[in-house]
Image (cartoon, rainbow, N blue to C red; front, side, top):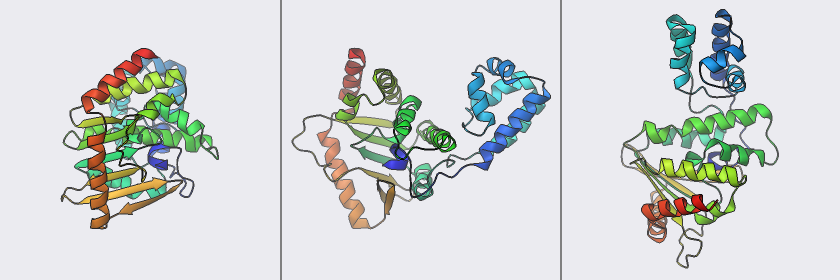
Amino acid sequence: MASDNGGGGQCGEPELSDSLKTFGAVLKALRDEARLTQEQFAPRVRYSAAYIAKIEQGKRFPPRDLLERSEEVLGAAAARVLAAAAKSLTRKVGLASWFLQWAAMEEDAISLYSYEPSVIPGLLQPEPYIRALFERRLPPLAEEQFEHQVAARLERQLLLAARPNTTFSFIIEQALLERRMGGSEVTRVLFDHLLRVSRLRNVEIQAMPLIQEDHSGFEGPLALAETAGNRWVGYIEAHDSSMLITDTKAVSAMLQRYGKMRSQALSHQATTGLLEQMRGAL
């Protein structure tokens, strides 16, 4: 799934965010008012100067704890201004236009299922893995597109913790864990991240074994969302194109395939054991 998981969409350019640029400009103005350089401000809020620079340029989504830390440095009045600017930010910044409909459904779903045979699902990717994917994107992304898409994906991942009553199920191929995309260090971070996310009570991660003679996922990647009205919708994506599937018979077939794959994959507990074993072997 290109925009969700891989290198971003070509047929729909990432939507650059005025709200990110505005937030960055407000932060810079408040920092200047306090007569602090980026090099002076950054350690006081416990981030690097380079990270603060990217936020002020509108290239990075500000982390949630930046507001609280900024209040300690800039004062309560400045923090209120910064909080007001933060309210205009949206998870959808940087997402390809043709992906936005599915991204909106993600935010309201009560169940989300994903099978991905070619890359770790976007909601499970740590930042080094995301950057490794985008660095291999062809044709290459411009720097601004690159940073906006990284920011968008990281912000989308907040759904896992922000929606504790939503059930998240992921089936990933063991081959993706063996591949070491981006190198051993990126893979080590990936394993740590997957193990950490797998401890959330609403998240289930299952690995499909390298050898599985009875595999129902040969038709390719798929995603499924259950709406608040208990209606299921399917989504497929490949090579910079996507399709939202609402036909009940087609969605039913996708649910059957996904259910069968869950029985064919390793259990959540066995997958955790596999990740720990592979992590220790790096």
